[in-house]
Image (cartoon, rainbow, N blue to C red):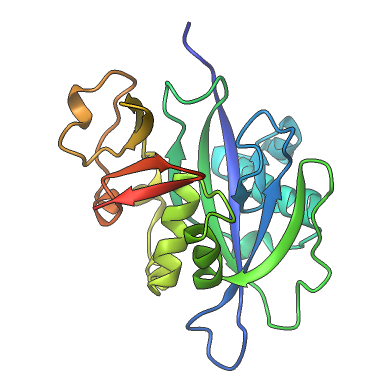
Length: 232
């Protein structure tokens, strides 16, 4: 049976830690252990696009952006400006990974250094909200203290490398086609195979295109212990 793919939006909220914002901090949440999708994973604020997000005759792009804004408030008590949300990436859940599938648009926004101090997890879908640099979160990931889904890990690796400003220059036409990985068992582990992996096209599961932006990402992610590990 083909699983329905639901629209979703997630937001990377950045704020500078000082006069220079070369290494800004960002807000992340730990998903509830009872969640049916990515339990206990550390994620950005986000969720499904709801009917209420399509108010006032909004088109699809506006509905996604409204969902991103709403989810920031609902999950983290973070108010972000709609016109400052920049859509920089899109991912689609692999057909074999989960009963729930999403096509998720990733947005980036920045706030001032004196904002966001009241941010807090909702205590229902999320918990343990935190402001931290991408480098600090990646250190926790390497120590297997946090679990990061491959899309989230990809964003954090790019943030730590200082690549986030280039996201602001991506026009919608360049990010509309989603990155669609495939998931396969290999021996006793799981592999998330990206579209630019040489084996991708011949593997079972829904097949997507190879957007140019995916070429800068790892070709696959392997489940090792309590974390996903990128492969060159």
